[in-house]
Length: 487
Image (cartoon, rainbow, N blue to C red; front, side, top):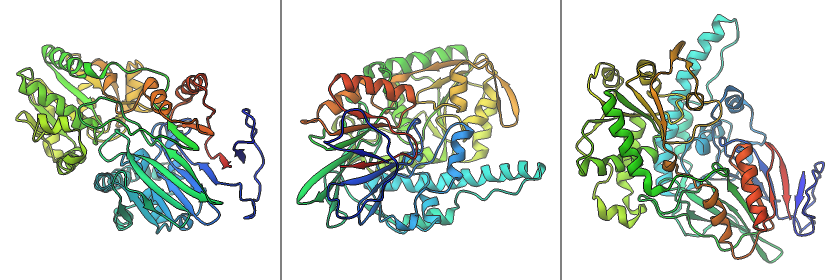
């Protein structure tokens, strides 16, 4: 265990666990990093006081097999002992293990913004279906190898039980958890409903604050508001997904997308865009809507993702959370005449025989599952096709393997040659880059006792740490499973 506080020197020392007694009033909280350290998935942080245990996020591990196996490990805490789960946003790497938590006895409150709750419900339902399908395939392999069958992480029944635990709290509304603890959600500008969590704790007549950035969005995007500015905090956990790079200018998004669309259509093939169902897909639809309005988009756009279609309908329901500029530009920004929905697998399969150039947007965003894999199977080997990445590709995912230049990939039981043109637009990221992260932390009026750098691969976290230290911040990059005492 590590102790962090004013009396500690800048150099941190890892200490053996101590049994703390309630008379040590200097102890603020104990914090355990159960995910999203050294990686960008599996967000889950456990905060403990002498009376309560609170989780911030409970995300699924995604990526290479060595990472996804962590989903099947037991929680290193008792789910029955958790009083509250504070959910920063609906992405599966932040919410995906909630039904597993419920399956193992959690019955506390899940606190989230109204849009996050609506999005999490459809995403968890989809996750359960994907998990059941994957488990069926895995158990066929296990049967052939004489291994015992694997139980699914959770079922639809567990998902539905989790629905009853959600409790909505809107932005900038202080919510009392206990006599000692209160929280406030602030807009993170990452996806619809995403939040920065400001947690306040009373101790010995004083109030202390710990801030969880969640996933921070970029500034000056057309859909969402900028991430909220936090004025003060004793401790900060900040994400570092893109802590080692600077994005292309966001103002270039439309031009870059327009060029890729034109080039793909000139090649005469299909433009395949793997996209996350929530936010990235709707952002693409918005820009394609603009291209259609301006007469640039000449062919149809097919949204081949039931989850993304459901998410788009939720976006239309929660228009008040979007930027005023967007609402002024389009009464219905996420729909236009050339956009076609493919709701069923039969409709999706018909695209294999579609002879004209077109755009296909399908999940999953990292090509780890979903209908995009079927389109890759049928078109990745075609030199007239184009594969365009517009989102982060985690280590070990099929998307990352293709992006790093693989000539052939193994997927769905076969080897597929990569002959399609592979392109990437980085400015579509819904994460703040290095400059954005440093700027956000720099708005604090007083430097916190410690900035914990999380939610990033090691190189990204280290680069952000170097820049924050230059700016005078005391930082620390925790390890998976590490526990610290905040003093």
